Image 1 (cartoon, helix red, strand yellow):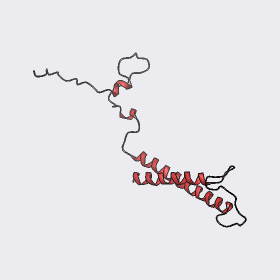
Image 2 (image 1 turned 90 degrees about the vertical axis):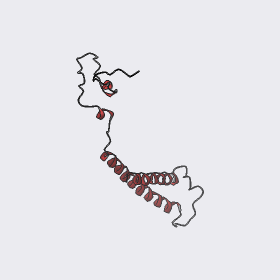
Image 3 (image 1 turned 180 degrees about the vertical axis):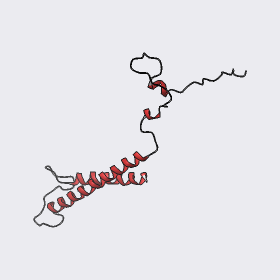
Image 4 (image 1 turned 30 degrees about the vertical axis):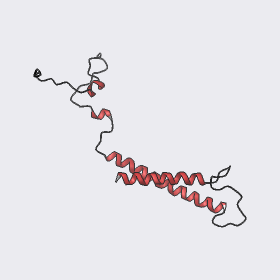
Length: 123
C-alpha cells in the first residue's frame, strides 16, 4: 500500500513541477515563448493560463492528500519512532545531581556484557 502511494506521490510531484514551469511569468514561461495571436481560442495565452492554473490547483490538492496519506501510513507502522524509544526501561538513568556513574543514555545503548558465571575457554 505504501509503495503505491509513494509512486502516485512521485508522479504528482513531477507533473506539478512541469506545470509550474510551463506557466507564464513576467519574463515568459518555458513553453510560452513568442507572441500570442489575436484570437481567444483554447491555446491562446489566456486559455492556456486558465488550464495551467486549474491543473496546478488540482495537482497541489492531490499532492497534499498523498503527503497526508504517507504520514498516516508511517505513523501506523510498528517501527520505533526514535532511538530513545528503543532504550530498555529496566535500566535506571542518572538524575542531574549524580556524577558520571556510567548509567547515561548512551551507555544504555551499548551492548551489555554477560554477568553470569565466567567459563574459561577450552584450549
